[in-house]
Image (tube, rainbow, N blue to C red; front, top):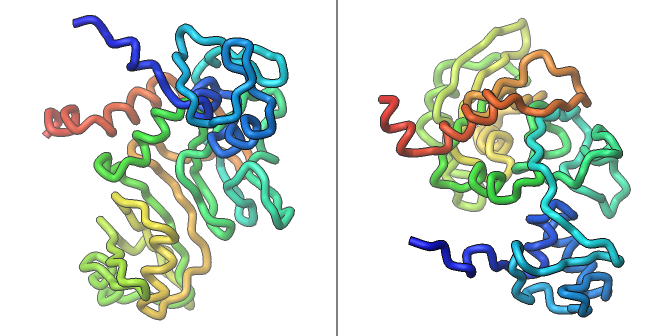
Length: 254
């Protein structure tokens, strides 16, 4: 069956994102400011239909074309925010990236106080698939608690904890990694990503989180990548993530 031409038709703001120029929110600003032309004509409606394979899209007189797809992993340090710009002037994750990179967007977020593995890409469809609730891609965290942890706390987060807003927050797996005299490191696996999931889960139990480090997303492991450093995913790593997001591949593996 022939593919319908409408399969590559998207709104103008989304087109700028898919072409790797900027985020969709930034695209809306550019369009409303009169900086974007579609087939030589100024357009002010971010939802104006665009056929990606046929139409000419220009920003400030420069024609856009689809960028080579880029998939990066960054070891986010504590204290940086996961946004392109910050109204409060706080340092963002983009300070860790090279100036010569095309625009990339984070796949999900790590809050300012959290650190570790963060994926970035200019492939917006792939990023959306990674975050889709039905994907249930495991994310593994190492969490330093401000006290010694007993089995009761482990059982509680595995059973599910009701947060203040009524959300039920639950860990898929949890275990003690190591204990000191006054604190404990836990390994926690989530297969969903509610806002500040781990911190809110422990807050509801009256437990203090000192550090929170994401160490893996699906089969992709942070490893020894230094803080603030980034690198491209290898072809093998990208393929492994794609397989992990594919429900049919998962079911065949069992």
